[in-house]
Image (cartoon, rainbow, N blue to C red; front, side, top):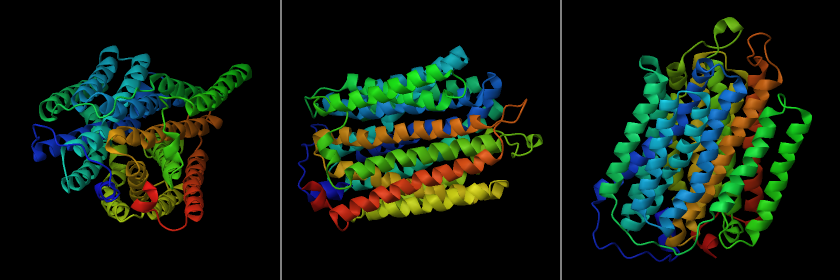
Length: 481
């Protein structure tokens, strides 16, 4: 990504008076990216366990994951922007505080309400995974940043692996409460390391942060998702009222944002070639991954005596998803090289096609463990390629003082996409259940994968339309104009 910013003449800030050690700064960036990415991927395999432990329905347990992703939506807007208007060390401390408290609340409370609150706080703090994009860009110069970005891609993959396996291992040999206490300790250690290693710096921007717009965004999105997931359990009047509130709130939010001096998204950036499709793609790939994670977790952990399912525990589910995490390494590295050569549109198309192949495979072959290993590898490879392109494009069009905001654009749509994908699967699971046990009927898993394929194809359509409108590949010069 750095090659693009240098080639279009984006000014760089002068290096700080005290230059940080390059290796230490990259190392703590990798640690931060690892632990924060792990949070999102630890939760899905644990949902069936939480459902059993707290006597929840499928919709209620899925909302633990939805709360995590909605909190992430707010965090992806606010935390990166805070690095622009405050400084990196202060923002690191704030995000660490949210992560620590988010882990301690369910550990101490040990109840469904505290799980929801803790998940939302963890999601908000987990947006700190984007902070290295800002502080590495500010404190490293020249080709060192490109190396750092590669390290972050690898760290994202390692975080996914840790998330897939770490949570299952902890609850298998300890307990759910121990899991959250261990998380809190890991976040505390990471925060202390950030405060020691990341140097003080002056704010890059004097602009204000659109807190009200962010809260409003999350509020109307939550209302729409509630309507989607609770439509079969609430009265018609209640569900229509909530849905109407969400839709009207969204329309009014969009109108206000257009004239706001502290808009959540910079509308001008969305008009640049491929920026709007890239943000849309980030949301859809988020929805794909959320749907995939929930479909695999609930099927794999359903006891075989129900008539389907693999009867594995959370650790077993994590191992089935491991190819998804491992292929993140391959997809991220390959995609990064193509994006640096000015071909993000091609990366989006290829990533979509690969994801469709994996989801299509799982739609019709998901009764055996080995089938998940194959499908997970394709979905992981495709989604990682998609994220690499989607997050790179907004960064290519902004100066250094808006690096955090640009990262937040794609990050917020990704988080909302995660919440949407979770809501879609939750709704499907409540459409037709097995009497007495209350679990979704087996055919709904096929439908779930087919719907997810449909979502992925939307990325293909939107990207190809953008390519036709702007003719040819996206490159540094075309973006900057």
